[in-house]
Amino acid sequence: MAAETQQQQPTEPGPPSRPRRSTSGAERLELLRARLIASRLTPNAISLTGFALNVLAAALIWQTEYFWGGVAFIVGSIMDTLDGGYSRMSGKGTPFGAFLDSTLDRIEEGIVLTAVAATFADRGDKLAVAAVVVAVMSSLVVSYTRARAEALGVQCKVGLATRAIRVTILSAGLVFASLGALEPAVYVLAGLSSFTVLQRILHVRSELARPQAPAV
Image 1: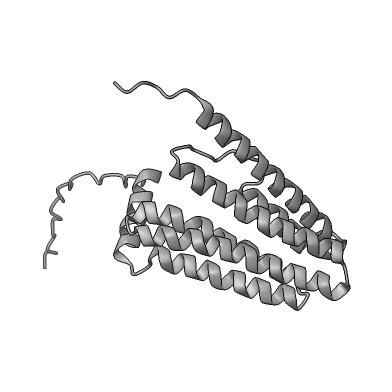
Image 2: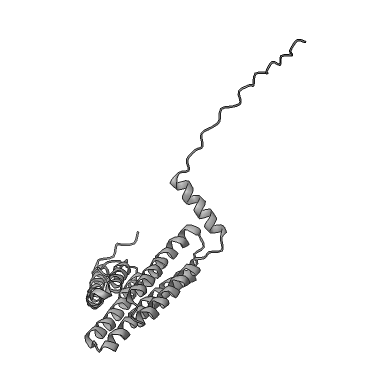
């Protein structure tokens, strides 16, 4: 019996597969932005999380857990820097949110330094306590001078001890407190903050003394 032979039909080639296009950094950022906008995350939630972490940092410092207090302070401060960028990127920012962010920044810095002053007071280190008081007042005035200058139409971001620098100094002092770095950090913070106040006063005085351009 003759064997039946089956002839295999030739398969027609399909369309050539297109190589997957790699996603660029701009496209990834836009995708992240779209997801964040669709989420329920708000800039105020980030600000309040940073505030809670700073309160935790103050509690840990009060218990002389300087290292972990420093870690909580660092993470809380990072959250404080993220809320502004997220607000601009997501478009969820509000005037009240900007006001809340600035207000919480001042409270956070004060509450952490107050906890540091309390530990110095327990040791009987009056000079260090006084330095903390100067640092708190100067830090508040640094922020006030900028706000007041901008109300007068003068940009005032000059000075050595910006918030980022102040956070860095205090963070280093807390994390390396076991090596005796906290007291020097407080002295440096008080000195630089006071000097920055002077820098901004002189800057605003100079800007306001300039002759105004004639109106066209």
